Length: 416
Image (cartoon, rainbow, N blue to C red):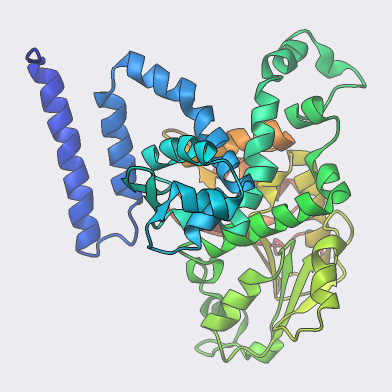
């Protein structure tokens, strides 16, 4: 029989439980579109309910979750389970399907069922749940390979790396620009460029991230109405045949395809730009698409001049400030004053009280690429540093907001 708890602690836990119930009711009645607040309140309750010792133990063992997940996906276990839909599958069947020892299946899925990746429905019997096919997908596996697994390697060198910085080595010519370089000997993008399999993983991961968004860029920023308000005669809608939209660093074009799906009457020009290794397969497969596929490195001058709208979606967090200035300057030089707009999508960190996901993404950018997620003021400072101005920030909660940018009326850069 347990001992009675302090009334203040019990009351705190009751209040936190009530907040969870309130978040559930808000979701149930359509006051919010997603379950983010429910999850946030559940995490808060867990943190307050755990003892400090249990909290420390949970954090200490978290790397093993990733270890089990990689055993499962690289061994084909999770893909085999996902392929069976909602059927029960035995460890023997999975061993046969994945060509792995049964004991490996049992030990790996013991942990993965405990953390919710799939369900345990009996002795050595399993079933996929709603998380399983997502975690077994090409995009999520690609993300594990290009971001999560490298972080594990970096962690083994992290104390050594920061000791080097503390000892003043950052002033030396040999100073590595990131913990990734210190660990693996070259920048992440060089690794992707030299390894086609990892590049394919990266592209699949980027595509998956774009597809998982609950709100697309064009629902956060109402394109036709806003451009009409800015550019068309008062009270008129802009003729879409006059619009050119350029998606800079747009991966495989999912954002442009999503836009045309939502705007079937659009008949303007759409241009997708990315590196040759990403654009090449689109040019080679012969498929007809809603956009022009154009190889382009955004560190070089922008070839499409005077477009109506340039998109820079989820790109700048991959680069440190000086690189971002080069990207933005190339776009500013191509924009037409009084006409062109640039939309930057970015997860804007709050000055206080950042959520776990945002803080984790910032840490990931730091160790992988010496880059960062930014606060609103930091991003605005970058924009202003190349002679651009922010028109409006279209907020999107804890997800990626849209920052609308243009050339100032009295500036000297860009096209007249």
